[in-house]
Length: 284
Image (cartoon, rainbow, N blue to C red; front, side):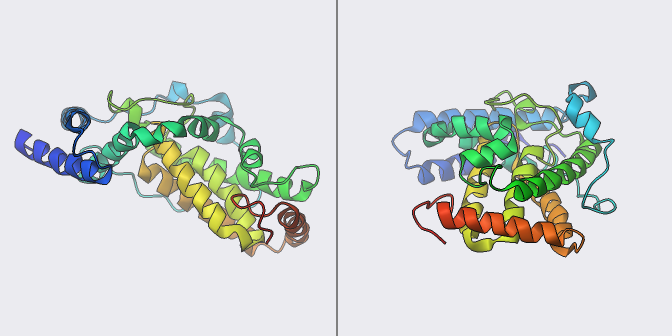
């Protein structure tokens, strides 16, 4: 049953009040009112329109081709991930408002370059830039394993994405800006986050000495994805599930035992020379 205008306004007011307290905006009610109005408009849209499906014609050629490829490490198909919350649900509304809050927070303006990098750079190049991966010339086996994991996680994500055809949040509400990237696949699960998470998860499987740094980078990347207007929280959570499933085969496999040993050695040398990505002067 559709909620009354009163309930929508009450829902928004409570969220706007929490927003004001969190960011100390008591004296800046204009900004709070702007957020409140955007919230009302978005909630109105969610109760009057059905969420659109991702257009099949918008799939990127490379992503369509991946659907026909076979995995290298994983066996069989992953159990289907439950569908994401619809925009008619409270959880679905909270997700959209969270994206708006992140975009409206002035402190998040500095996220724009990182969000663009996270969505547009090649995963290997991105993790090199963030000091997570060593140079491929000195760690060829490690890069080969990252490539294999990336291949498998991409296939599984895209199969799930095809089942749900979820659009990005900016396609649901005009009050959510599209700040980065050209969308080449449905948003659920997040293909980009799954690929980044799988690569960093592989490093943690091989050597967990920088696990805290990896967790911090991933948490920040997740917020960047929301800031960009391309993903919601449930897109990120689904990507984490696919990444974890993919990595479970790496951990259990005896067929790539020798490769794992060589990759561990390459990563250990990198960490000894460079340290963890967020604390390069502190050598593990």
